[in-house]
Amino acid sequence: MDTSQVRLDWLRAFLAVVETGGFTAAAARLHLSQPALHTQVKQLAGWAGPLYRFEGRALRLTPRGQEVEVLAREVLGAVDRFAARAAGKVATVPVVSAGRALQLYVLARALRGWSGPLSLRTEDRPATVEAVRSGRAHLGLTSLLEADPELDGTRVLEVGQVAIVPEHDPLAQRRHIRARALAGRPLILPPPGRTHRATLAAALGGDLHVAVEVDGWELMTHYASLGLGLTVVNAYIPTPPGTVAVPVVDLPRLQVHLIKRKHAPPIAEVAALEAHVRKHLAQGQVRCGRGAEGRRGRVKRRNGTAGAAAPPGHEACRCFRRIVTKGAGALGRVRWPVSTCHDVLVDKDIGNSATPSAGWWSPRPTVSGRCSR
Image 1 (tube, rainbow, N blue to C red):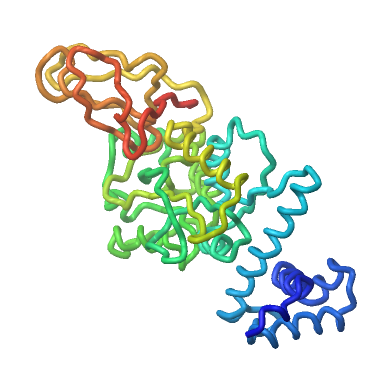
Image 2: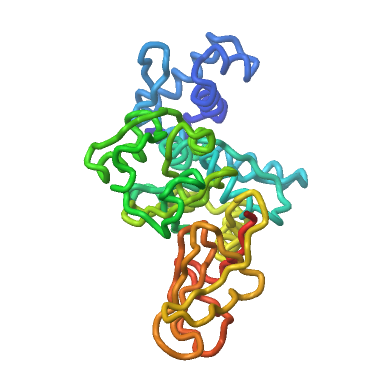
């Protein structure tokens, strides 16, 4: 394979076809005729091997085509960065891919204070993983169901799942429930084939009474607030007015990862953004969006002793009404309500002090328990 034969315009032509999904739109983008574009892509395929195939009208890359896409992005990216720095411009605009809910309630808060340019892609989990693998996105924020050999992933957030129930529902008075408590109840679920639905079906032994099928966390909680049924969502999703979020303790916890492609060339702008997001997630900048100001949390004692106020600036959500201490002493071993809408309760030996210290939240330290309910 003679690398001297490869031309940059071949690579640009191929990327245009990949990004637009066809030759007509790619030719318009590059201001080329379609025969000229076909010739360039054909020459690249002659050098690298078969790059794509058509399934109906959809263009699908071959494994070789996927490798060439990554190569093209790296080579053209390096050339573009060199030219931009020479012209005194921003060399690279970091691209981040994440789902809509993760962007709204996790990533958006972690981006506070970021002053550089940024491009965001709104994609579901498979599309986010594929965008990072291919180089279309530098970073991704998503839940990984299993380790991916092509990606480096760091867990930045772990949350439980909550059932969204009306305030007057008997389940609303419970501190937490098990999934079986939802058996026979009308449920609002995503369409068949979704991992979330399959997980609930397994937990309920297949006893799903589907009231509404709809895609999207916000729509699921919205229809729950209208009384069409109960739903289960990740704990960072805001609770609509008139409903209560009750933790479901036997459902798997969601682990959110910040991912990037292994062996990707180092880019200063991307590294700065990655460090910024990691820092803000590690500091617990993700809070729930409950909608109205919450009540001051109280810690109740099992032995009936008067409860101690939660630390200043820390609020307790309604879904954690009963938080008990264990053991004797002034306060003993206390379970503080820590960012309670994230379904996180951590035991902490605090002796006679009611002030929690760094490292009291898992998996990252120093999280604010304030809730904007």
